[in-house]
Length: 306
Image 1 (cartoon, helix red, strand yellow):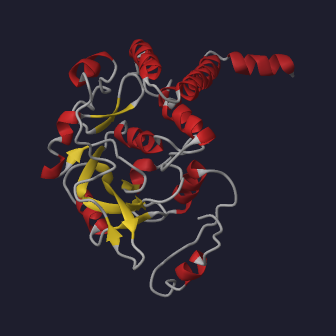
Image 2 (cartoon, helix red, strand yellow):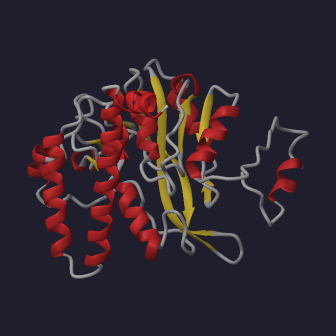
C-alpha cells in the first residue's frame, strides 16, 4: 500500500496478533508497480486481488477458494463487481442485477464482428472475457446470457475482484509501461492461460465497487480520458512477439472499424482521434524495438556506439 493519511496502517497493525499480516509500503510508481511489489512478497497458495474502493461480500473468499478445490487445473478466478453507493449509516445501496462485468446488451453486428476482428485467440472460443486476434479485450455475448447459471471460463475480469494460483504466476513481472493499468488483468490471465491453466468467472464471488469521484476507472475526464483511451488500445503491442496467434490483418480491420466509429460519434471527436493516433504511434514504436532486438540490431548499435 501507499502511505495513507486516514490511519489505515494503524488499523492493519491492530490485527497483527490474530492474522499473519505484512505491510509493504509502495514509495513510488503506479498500479502495476504495486502489483509487482505485492506478487514479490506474497506467500500464500492463492493470491486475491481487491481494490481499495471495493467491499467484499460475506462469502467472497470462500467462493474463490472453492474454485481451486476442483479437479480441473484452475489458475485464476474472477468474480462479479457490483456498483454500489455507501450510505451515511454505512449501508450498501445497489441496484439489483446491475454489474460492471456482466452485460445484458448484445453488441451490434456481434456475429459479423466476431468473424472479422473480434474473433478470439484459438482456445478462447468459449471464454466470456477473452483476447481477440486483433489484440483487444472482448466479451462473448452468448456466454453472458448464461452467466447466472454458474461458473464459466473467462480470462479473468476486473482487478477489483479476482484471484490467481501462486504457482501459476511464478516468474511473472508486469511491464512497467502502464500508468492506469488498463487490461493488466487480461495480461495476467493470458500468462496463466498460455501455461495450460484454466481461468474461471464465478458470479457468486461478489464485491461491491463504491461509486465516488474520479479514480482509475470511474468518472474519467480530461487528460486521464486520453490516457485511458491510449492504454486500452496497447494490449496488442504488449503481447506482440509473445503471442504468435495475434493477427496483424485482424488488427488493421479493427483499426479501420474503430476509426469510423470515432468519426460517427458526435462528442469528443478530437480527443478520441488524438488518443487513437498516440496509441498507434506508441504501439508501433514498441513493435519496432521488439523487432530490432529479435534481429540483433539494437545490440549491434550498442557495439558500434561503444
